Image 1 (cartoon, rainbow, N blue to C red):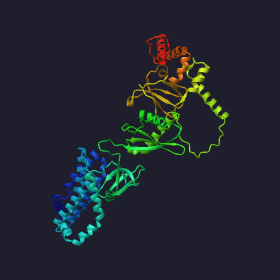
Image 2: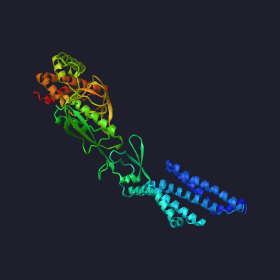
Image 3: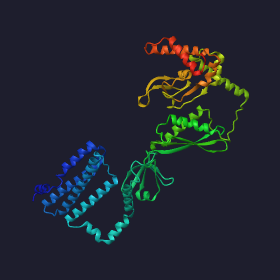
Image 4: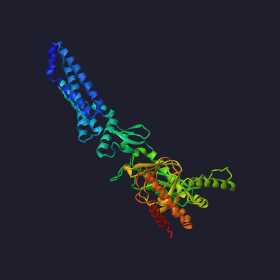
Length: 506
């Protein structure tokens, strides 16, 4: 038989040739629907090439009159193993995911392994020897294989158990034992489970070790969303009442949550102890994105820090600290005068207070309350009640209308500018949301502060109403709007509202 006749005989017998269209079909399907799995086709491609080479070798041997049965058996083995590989990619990587079925990788590997063993048994029988008989009849070989695969079988059974009871799934955040590695489960294979840590590392844990260890699944609770409780301590001057500290921090965290912080359960602030020179408070909150634990901790700490500063609550100072600066009466007086001068200068830039006399401005300056805010923190919320004005001395804030994704920026405010004048003078609800773009230093003027000035000199209400009416008229003119009412009518309305808010008699 010539080489060509032998090659045609191989082709008619179905060797390799019929595999080429199937291989091309899988390649096209993977390229269209699962391009990330292109590498999984390469083993089958290599097996097909080897099978084709063996077919050529077998045709040559047949043409020369040599026995080609071993070569044909080897070619058939490579072909069938290539079929198993292509079927694995087509079914588990392309078809099933498209209908929403994701099979764990360990089950895919086991199915592929079983199919490969079946292929070897079939090819062995066709070649005249039995792989199954060889394994079952050789007690020594069976014992050697069993002993050598003891750890491998333990890992395999561990991986099957993990998949069967779903105690750990891909995507879970776990901690292995006390003080062990912690990270997100990225893969569960037949031999090991891989976790990716927050330090950008991948830890490979044998399944048998995982089954024998205590594993903590972070953030999982039956019937509840995925979230993890976090906690940190605050050390505050013990001379401040605990109720004031707890109220200041909870008011901030509850009213304006940090990104990735759950609103349910709400954050907690606990008074957990008193040390030599400070009180200890534990702040607890629930984290919704377990990948950003420490950055969120930092953001919550920043909010708590600024909340305490706004409330005038000092953090603790170590008892062993040594102050070398002599705090004399002259020094305290000089610092007080410098601060008072800064406040009066800030007030002088506000036209709203132009009607006030020098003594009245000095009284107002002494009563200003420092109000710092962190970057991204909301100073006021649209629609909330308010009775205070904020005067910016450092930083930038943005004024927004609307909430959430519909929020629209309408203005930016910087040092020397103010907002909340209508809330201070009339008690009107906040007309916009103001958010700190940078760390913001403000002075706050509350109704109680201004009450004494208006009560002592009621005509201030008329003068401030004139300023507010002029500001509204100028704003409408800048927007190209025509005033619906005259300035006199606006002023009269404001005077009534101011007098009513401060309880002045007509």
